[in-house]
Length: 117
Length: 117
Image (cartoon, rainbow over all chains, first blue to last red; front, side, top):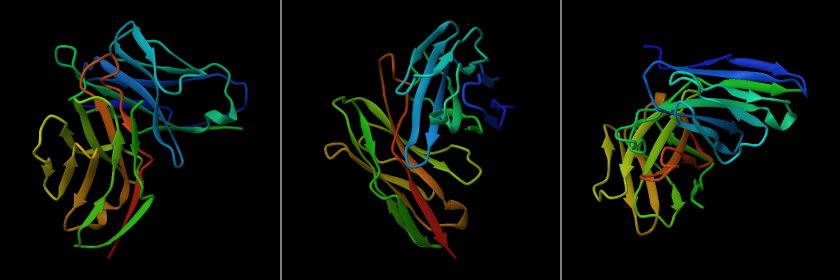
C-alpha cells in the first residue's frame, strides 16, 4: 500500500521556469490538498480538492495552479517559479464519509523540497 | 479567521520525564477538530492525537494525552515517559467540522522538542 506518493523529492529550478509537482494516492480518497512549509511558518494550505473536477484555493494560492482530473492524482503547477516559492511542499489526502472529511486522519506524502535560484 | 498559536518555539525534556507543549487557537465556531502532528527529521507528518471539540473527555493515545480547555481555547499536549524517538517538531492544527473548508488544516508554527538522554 503506497499511500500518498510525491515526486520528485528534490528539485532545483531557475527563476521563471515552470514545473509540476506530482501527487498520487492509492486509497481512493476524495479529499486532497497541497501545503507549503517554510521555516518558522508551519504548514500553509495552497489548494485543495474535494473530488475529481473540483478544486478551490487555500490560504496562499498565488503562483500555483491545480487540477483534479482523476481521484488518484492532484498535481501542483508552478507556471513561472519565483525565489519566494522556495519551500517544502506536502500533498495530503483524506477519506470522506457522506461528504464529511474533517474527522478523518489526513495522510501526508513525504514532501518535495523545491529550491528556486 | 481561525488561527493557531504555539508559543514555545523550542522545548527540551530529559528522557523518561514528562513534557507539555502548549497550543492556543482562535475561532468563533463551536464544532471543530484539533490535532497534534509530529514531524521527525525524516520530514514525515505523523498524526499523534485528535480531539473532537464537542467531546469534553480529553483524548489519550498511549503516552500522549491532551488537556483540552474549550472555553479558554487551549489544547496542550502532554508526553509522558519521554523517549529519544519523541524528538521532533510538533504541530498543533485545527479544522472545522462542517462546511466547504472542513478538511483544510490550519497549523501553528510548531514546537521543536529535544529529548536529552
